[in-house]
Image (cartoon, rainbow over all chains, first blue to last red; front, side, top):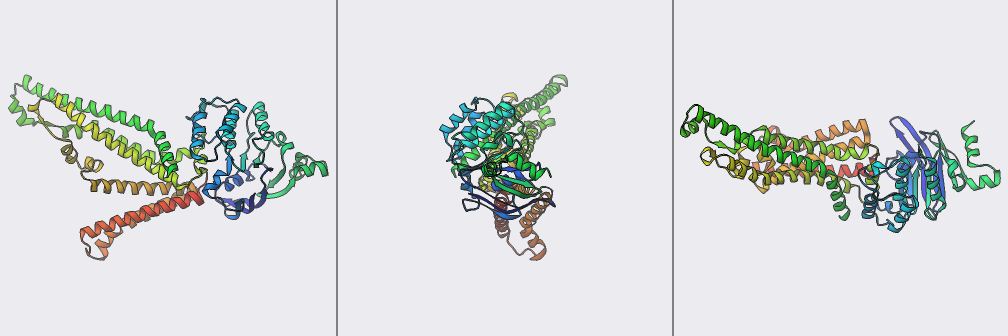
Length: 229
Length: 277
């Protein structure tokens, strides 16, 4: 389980996160939703120790992040993390070299799933294909948790469909996923838990299926209640 | 250790293009320099002997034999060396900043590697050292070739023959780059390594605290310099030349090692606890 406990984060004098707490379980898709600048990416960066927090605690399976934790949690940012001059194959080789959890079989499967060409250079990829390569490099790791930052941001409809298909495939099965997105419509029916953020705080945390079944409300309906007052 | 070697190899491959270009420039410019300087001297000799009817003895008495030092002191020889030094100095900053900026943020990948983040620091500092020593090694290979070209162009009566060692020791600037003994090599390049480690720590301060980090970096650099020269200051102003030169030398080495260890520790702390992508 990923536990985010009372996390506070400041940029200069501005407090971006004001005591954010939530949990994300293995086998569940947790969606962080909020308007731009609310701190969604900062939370993911903080979980991966890519930015320091000023207060609070983040635990992964009960322990603070250590170097070997990166073998069981992966972060897929919204920008490609490989060098522009590298080819997709070289990027995969890089991952294979450094991660014991790299699953070459799954990487090959993802390559054909996304219809990517291994010899294409990263610099030559479209936004959609860059996002797919990012997903490939993240999902080909045999990790327990996957963090995704805006995987649908700025990409075409067909690429979005392909990426959304990942969420219904075995590639995500049994993993804990934390995703931030604006385009919640693409994966609304797949989300287990929703964490709504506003003004640096968690304003509502709910189970998407329970809201659907008990209150007859979609995630977007609940978002409207919270954000459009 | 395995990850360090892999990452250092990766970083060295990343710099290989710049490195090759600088080696190419050095090779071409220095060899052209030998040819140009030798021809300049020979043209002058021809002019004096054939047009002004000077004898060889008179010419040599007036203008002396040409030695390779004339080539070494020319911009043809020193220019590429300065360019390589500037290249390394530039790369000390580029090796970190290029990972943060641009369309592809490679720093995410580096910081998420399942290895100690200090490995990144060590891999990058190794790259700088390999690059620097690579230039020196190349210069050492190039010098005998240039001496051969020089010998081939200038007749023996007109030249003062020198070996590589003589050429190097003839100019203090060159003998710093190409030290004459192992001890000098360790001292000069140890000092260089220390300076790079301080700069790296400064860069990491900036990457961790942004604007405030620049002040922290300058402060850190100043403290490191003061600490490093503290035995000299102590000797001069406090203990009235109490230490023997050897003792002072050893104290300097100890201070250097302490600062180097401090830079590594501080960099490790910043990379682990304070760095921001």
